[in-house]
Length: 278
Image (cartoon, rainbow, N blue to C red; front, side, top):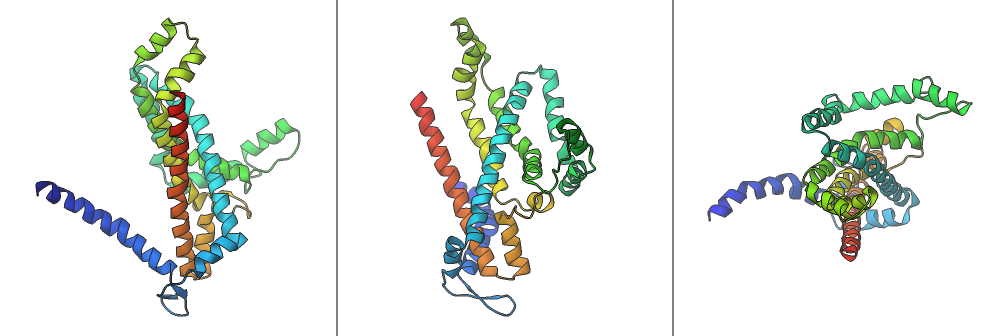
């Protein structure tokens, strides 16, 4: 009885802020568009989901969102792992300042940071000027795929570094010392000891980056070009510009299903591969 009383506020909170909005979105996704306020008539129609599966606009937007999120997650992992490893193996007095430096950009507004990148990546910005000088010709970064990925990696890199640091900082140095005593070179010690033991941190970091990156709207809108029609931009257009709430809701539900299925399949594949190696 005491356990139920303790958990009751938690379940009520989850039901109010998670289950109820999800049920509302699902109900709207099954409705029919209509003229009025709100612009739909409740019912049971799968037309919106059929359109998503057959119309190249929505199908390509979902696939592009998955691709951008996957590439951004991979880039964050390749950049974040050495950073997390360096912080975890730094002297104790330096760890907190390094973590503070990692989180310092979050003390400013998100839109301000993205607008700063617009200035840096503009045609008259110093980054483009330096790259143009090195390349020996004019270059363009703003409103390209490169700018989109730069913004994504910059924004979500700390979400990769923090769980990796948490996993790496808990590793017992005796494991590395034992491998070195047995004659393993540093690269073998990393591949056979450090990397396998940090798999939980890698999985957590990838989930923290991939899931919000799939539905990102602001970065593609401000840094990406016209071709960066990710699911977030298409959903915004359907909801606010076209006022097709059933289509926007169906797209949100489809995106939610993909976010449940794709990470689950990836986690299962990684776990199976890891168990095989063990």
